[in-house]
Image 1 (cartoon, helix red, strand yellow):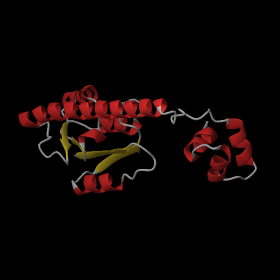
Image 2 (tube, helix red, strand yellow):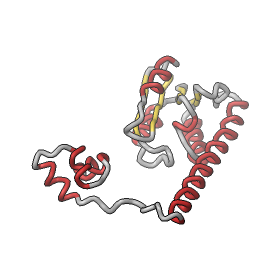
Image 3 (cartoon, one colour):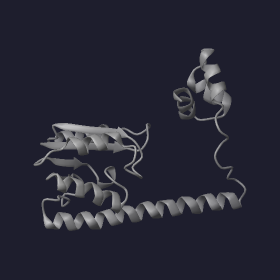
Image 4 (cartoon, one colour):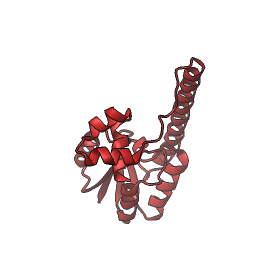
Length: 180
């Protein structure tokens, strides 16, 4: 059985393209979620997919970074699949097929590159923040959200967008406050 896994990092991103590609590839079961890929922790759909696959199945992703962002996480996942007798394939890296020696080699190389890119992205972000602090433009994270005020406004019939505007916070912060 071909089993698909799709992931995007934020609620604002769409899974549609990945889900279509996985269905086109012949996946009869697809797991998907909107979670950060920095770590495998908290990715419930990934955990379910890894539990679901059985010997002879193949787990398919559209891109390697949809599965893992670090070489260690990627190797752990692939080792777990291998132990269960499950193959792994990546659609946008056609040589990425753990059923072949070349695919296993390519997996290691691309995992290292993905981890390197993540590190470089973090360094660039840190440099930008440091420059902004030096220039006096960086204010850091906004103050913590007053959950009680958010709930009071919601109880008064004020919508999430208006609450966010009034309190000077993001709409996602309003939703988080309401769900806590």
